[in-house]
Length: 108
Image 1: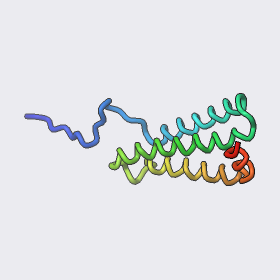
Image 2: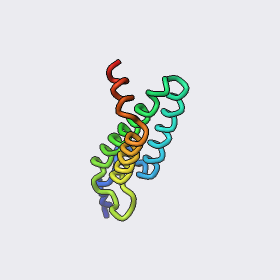
Image 3: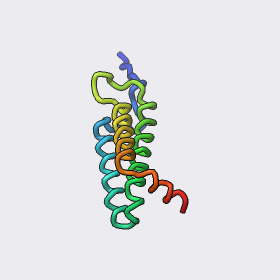
Image 4: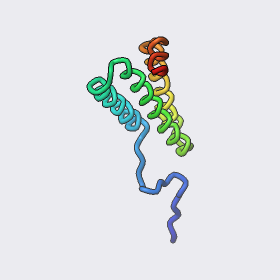
């Protein structure tokens, strides 16, 4: 008797991080970026950098979601985690970054 192996759900390394863990890692990275940027950069650059980190993490998890198209739709998926990060980033940007601040930052 031969055993059949379903390779559709296998990954190269044999394991993959669940979406909730990826989300927690992304939020942790953003907290680290926030803490480091508060210590090292001028105050007006902190929130734009945090928002950028949120959106970059969302894009990275979005790529993972695209690669894992067969996620269980009854549980939290990578697409859900990416969408939540985009929402958090957009709300943070709208609530904390003034347009004049952004113009000053881009102008020089």
